[in-house]
Length: 118
Image (cartoon, rainbow, N blue to C red):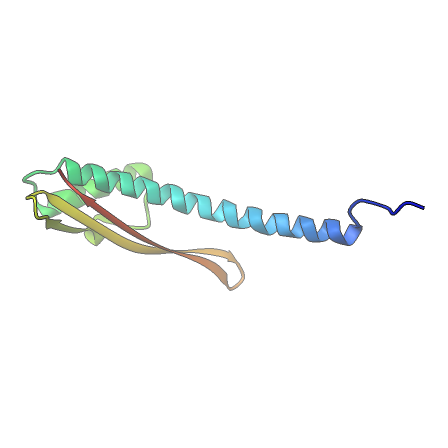
């Protein structure tokens, strides 16, 4: 006789649980990365187009942009603005975001963004 081929019920349940767990992690992580890329783009744009403006103006400009894109992970006051060696503006932003999965299990993301003008 030939051996039976295919997936057993226990294998199907295990595969379904594994697929569910991976889908849960992806659905929780994707919005965090979308927000990160949005923050990174805003910081790069601010570093390029802010010659001669004050630190407070840069921070308030970031806050206005963040309110439009619904960015909640970081605020303008969290940006570190300084002059770089070429006389341009350098902006650094570091932040952590904790995303709860279920129960006491969470994902923790640490982001570091650096942008320099010119």
